[in-house]
Image: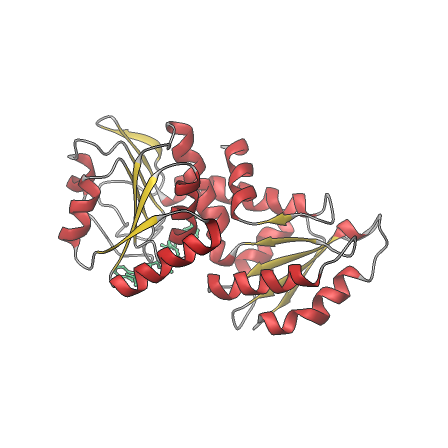
Length: 286
Ligand SMILES: NC(=O)c1ccc[n+]([C@@H]2O[C@H](COP(=O)([O-])OP(=O)(O)OC[C@H]3O[C@@H](n4cnc5c(N)ncnc54)[C@H](OP(=O)(O)O)[C@@H]3O)[C@@H](O)[C@H]2O)c1
């Protein structure tokens, strides 16, 4: 029996423990972590993966690109793919800081509750890896998306990066204070809070008293949560006719999805699992 080998190419100073545990739980026999990876370094690593096993065994070698910087991980993924040619390739997944699996789980759950096409969607603190991917996926689902951040310059740069990568328009708004964020929440049908753990971004009344908000989700697992008035375990929990998803309510599907994607890597030697197809898998699973 040929061993299923997963090489973690992590842009951070240590390979993510979270990603390695999920890799084993997803079906890898061995997980080999490489840290401090940059696009310039991947050549010999990819050669080692593509030139070592024959056509029938190549699918049991796979790559996982991670790390906390999405721009660096995107560059690494691009460099990996540039080394592939013909049948000389292995499957690769990109999930920098859990960006794709976490965002896809939330967007799939929100889309299952009601179609997102045409809905106004707000991603609070949408400038981190998870928020960026959530904003892009909401836009791919047809929502009219706005992201916020504390600085307009940073938020506009993120919006431009989303447009370059996905070809979708996401409006950038500066919202450095709670009052501004709460005004935007009140005016949005769908709200995702994607801020750093342990920071409230908007209070309960902003969404619970809004005449138009119908669905809210919060990625932040540590109290105070990003949105006041919901609980981490909420999964389509109803609050006065509005549906709420907390971090643990999203996290259950996120983990199942992440494991399922790892399992898929070993079913073929030419899969590239990134935002679009990870979202498609999430929608099948939600
Ligand atoms: N539920 C799950 O399964 C799961 C999985 C992975 C991650 N997470 C959670 O998802 C959230 C997003 O992850 P991430 O890696 O994308 O987050 P991140 O990069 O750490 O933070 C996202 C954004 O939060 C804003 N922010 C930081 N400190 C803030 C403060 N004091 N006040 C207001 N805004 C602040 C920043 O935006 P600006 O500087 O532009 O304002 C930052 O870009 C985190 O809470 C993380 O713990 C959940």
